[in-house]
Length: 380
Image 1 (tube, rainbow, N blue to C red):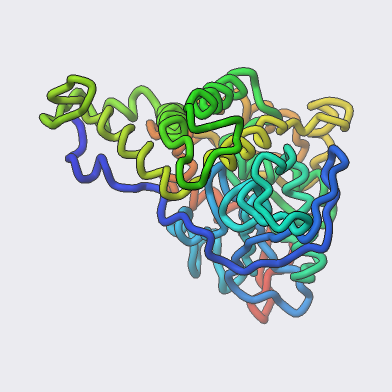
Image 2: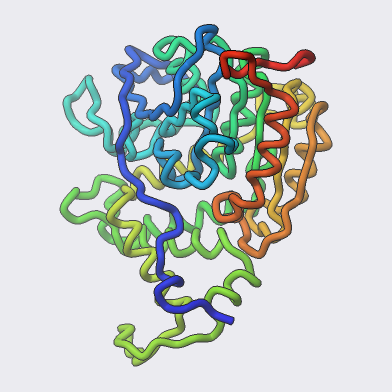
């Protein structure tokens, strides 16, 4: 049965904005050799760093997320929950290339005094994680990380944290991603970019702020929203309900699913930049743990941290087989498949199912000392 009209249109992702603190890194060299100067990193912290500076938890956001962990994963925050700010010093930072405060196309280039725009270089997931690692080590003075957690693009970052951080990272929780971007995912990202490129306002990326390629970006978001859910989920959410309204293009009525997608496409325009969307999807395309590490199998064997891997049974974007590949390759891993019709977005929407798995894993591998600080259990 379809949900009522209001619940269908409700925003399920929380408020997205640029809020947070900013650390300016003097310079940062990207994998491809370009050096960025005066690099802003937007981040938020929750909780208090303990005396040994070892109770840090890093939470990585997904494609168009931001540093406001409390907005989009707030159901798992608080005392007695996985993101317990009475135990952990929790850090969430915005990725490179985004428009939520970390260096990207909308950032002022210190060399020119103008926004980077199309001159912002292509970056990799590895670049973004390396930048965040500098934030923790050089600015926040974190001595070790108790756990890194993330889903989707956040899961890809989590894998890179494990590989780049080695003993600096004590455990990881990875959801809804694989060891690399499959041609299926690459193709879906490219279709979204092509929608943006086809907008006459795109102008090769050099569009006017007053006249951005909104039509293209709206369609890109609608394509993404379909890929994030499932056949069964859409049936339950919308059914074949129709709305009598001026739908445009000669339509006197339209299906609820059409109305929802148009609403999502339109609302996205107020919170994200088209060129940033192109850059962050290209960044996601670079995800490949095996690149430069002897291939996927060899790279996964290098992940020595205890690892919790979570799948959503109906995820068509990053299917269960991809998390199985992670589990098969990572030596100290455990894998759980959650039964849900929410598709890929289950990692955000099914927090009530994810929470007990995370808590059990954290309790087993991390403990509390008498001062209520996190203590790494022996054997990690």
